[in-house]
Length: 271
Image (cartoon, rainbow, N blue to C red; front, side, top):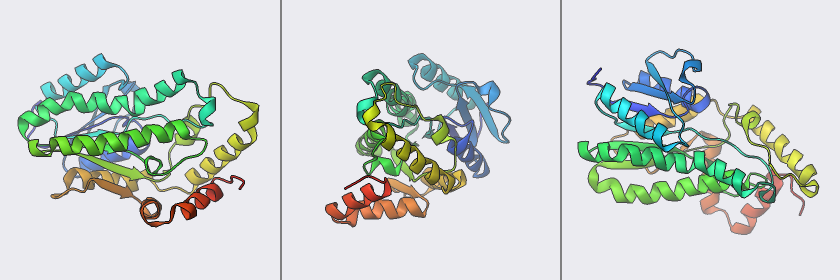
């Protein structure tokens, strides 16, 4: 099933940001492949072909990329969107749990990127769009493991982008603030909860739930993803939504002491 249209591959496309991005890319003229751990349960989506993928499993990644190239003949855009949240104090997550978060949010990005790069380099073009977060730019009390993973995605993406530009390939970042998805409900709870953090952990969950209730629609993020995929002269970073834009600006411009106080105020931390 070769196609003359550009082909976009979107991970974690069964819901939320990934689903909105898959639809938006299809509307923008791409042949879109969406992935899910169980594609049969993803439900039909106009213009999107769903395939099974577990970004934490090397063989699943390898076989998925091979199948897409065999069926469609090319991959022009990879959107690394699959991820998992985690809420709790840094001390409350075991290394095993932290590795689980990194295996999906960071190493999943690396697996998928490494799998598509030989093809993109051979065709002399391609874009990898990594869905990061403003929590990859700022501290996130009681979401330390998740923030660490997003900081890692930021550093990895910017570094690899420099390596690949001479080969016609770009690695770009989309940075949403909180988005109206099931993120809060599906985030991992700490596997080593400690009583000393219990009260503040519940405050953090309430802060997160409130933020998600008032958050941007996934379509806002999808619009930024399409821009990263199609802009003639792409930017390294695309903030998605007005809140994300303000946070990014404050991170760069505000005095560190002022920014620190604001972080503590927003997260209802004493002192």
